[in-house]
Length: 380
Ligand SMILES: Nc1ncnc2c1ncn2[C@@H]1O[C@H](COP(=O)(O)OP(=O)(O)OP(=O)(O)O)[C@@H](O)[C@H]1O
Ligand SMILES: [Mg+2]
Image (cartoon, rainbow, N blue to C red; front, side):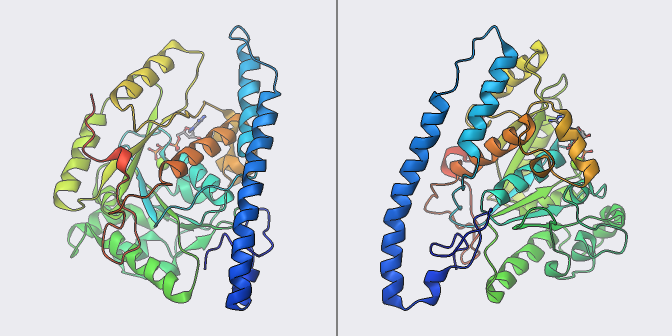
């Protein structure tokens, strides 16, 4: 069943019972037609209302940066509040990676995940970093001994035993990482199929959900540790797409060629569908020339893959994890929350048109590369 239920009463997140599915086929067909046309009218009216509100905003002049920022936030609030993002044709599995530390991998993973889930999609975060930062930010239990990605990887435990739902965002799930995972790099070395264990576990979990009649997972986001060891290799083998967060600072691009070489190697030997689909500029401070230069350089090298939205440096974003929250729930109206919501919308809308060979593996129900960002795109 489509959890974007046509006929049911939807809660704040758009989830709810689908009344049409309990009616007779004839009634259901009539309801479907009625709802579809109503949706079109409501959708147009909603877009029109948003456009009218945006155009009524006072114009910002370049010489008032504060005004410009307020204007941008107001526009984003109007554009994004209550908006539902399109479901991908099949589950998108995105590995968030950069072996450089502290560039915003975890922050990006949890906030994009929360933004997608708040906009009506079902999302799973897999925390493959022994630091467990993503688990902390999502407010899920990850004390030593909690079933986690360690049990899944090393003890072949079924993933469903480790999955927890976020207490704050319905539709957002997490496989946490505990401190046990710090030993996994070494334990995995001598194991059979050491590079593909996470992929096998996720495939089984997605099939298990389907058998149980649970809603399909629309997005899987995998948070990586700041290294290129076996945990990251597992994350690259499970992913179909890579999202690279780049911090708008000096040294930002150092190490990037190493990362791209590693992704090419994984693609050649372990996961032919893997490709860098998305780059997100993080901790952007528009007041500094350095940030502007880094952003311009990244956009020149990766014109199609870099999201238009960049994430500003924001105190609210960095405070949120200490409350076990994402910025989306901690301060939904802040610039940081709005930027992640807008980035999530871009991510979702880029995938809205599926390509024919979308299913990477027959019957897997898992999305392959999208057209506009094929792995063939060369950095210039
Ligand atoms: N946009 C932002 N504005 C302000 N602070 C931020 C922003 N994004 C991330 N931070 C802060 O920067 C630090 C590093 O971010 P984060 O933990 O997401 O990076 P990471 O790449 O996952 O790090 P690691 O490599 O250690 O896993 C954190 O303290 C986080 O709160
Ligand atoms: Mg991290």
